[in-house]
Length: 401
Image (cartoon, rainbow, N blue to C red):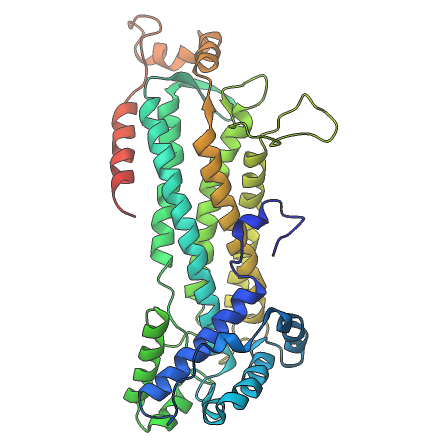
């Protein structure tokens, strides 16, 4: 899967593609079938990998078939049952028994999101390492601080990098909190009625859920058919990531203007070229990262709108709007995370240009210092607790996230 109109989409690879979603739904069905067999409810041998029953050639028909029932699991079940019946008619009869479409789709979405989160957390780790090195290496790199686009007071680039790092650490922490997305199994209306009828005991029905969750490596909680916080929470975490990366990209975009030239994206063959102006080398990573930061919040807002529109025991449209929205948001966040890691790894800092800009900003940039300490020698360092702030951020960065 690759999106021509979202340059860099290939970086997300197979994450959340149609094939990945189908594979995740099949994994959920297999885990439930194994739970039924393992608890002695289904007198069957659990079949081997059900994924072998579906091929890439089946995807177009599954996509078309999803329209008639409103979700992609219904045509997938028809296909799985027909093909499993040829191998093991008894197992085919137990497939999906006790589940509902939302159980399988929600849990499959969680599995796809888990893979995306793992990729993003890995890139956050790379970003934290790069930013920690920048903050420490540039403690003494003086530059003009800017507020509301104008010169403010002198700062160091190390402090600026520590500010970038703080945003990335906040994103890491929020993503870690959201990462524990649970299995979603509640039966037709969230009451576990069918599993309870199968087992004859509510406690045993819950044991089935526990067994399937363990098989899938997911935590367990009560059914959340119409309580969508597990998904809006991870969406918000994705946006916190793109917020932090967008803030970095914005500074790089400003800093890379020819008249500023304090920050330069790392060079790579063919990167940043223009179709018409061979003299240009555009800060393309920063541009694409900013794009993701602009696109993310409306997607998360749409998920919240769907959650707020939940009605009865299965939302009519509010549930359905989640699927493609989560896929788009997850893939775009993965792409932006990889691009930000690359940007920071190759970022060049023109310390001479920073210092020259600071000198040209004087004496105006020293106005606050003169108003507070009028007796101080001119151009005495006015860096406050910058070192202590950098140390505190680096200490936080060194802790496992």
